[in-house]
Image (cartoon, rainbow, N blue to C red):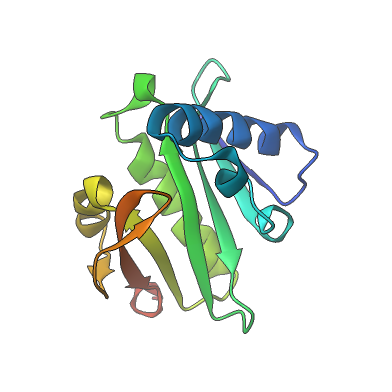
Length: 150
């Protein structure tokens, strides 16, 4: 497997990310495409995990905040055929490592309640109340990256 990342919204990697998000969020969860593809696309770093045959299997994007101390992790998606194989954790770790290498101090995200256990198992902590976003219940979670430095 290989993980690629890009900021180029015309790249094949970005188009693969959008295809996964369309399958998982728009078709699978009924999220309106107008919400799924937003004005932040060009400001994000888009990651795609490819399987051993070169097929796009999972994606996530990172949106740096304005003061460049924190990133917001968004659009984490693993295609159904690749669920429960640890690919989400592998991709999440890659995004975290990249974030730390770039000097960011923490990551936050709006976790769907159905995925909350995944994030808690990967070291994230709840930091708010449950809220609705795109018709789906979420909760904010975050993880400090400072303690990871050796």
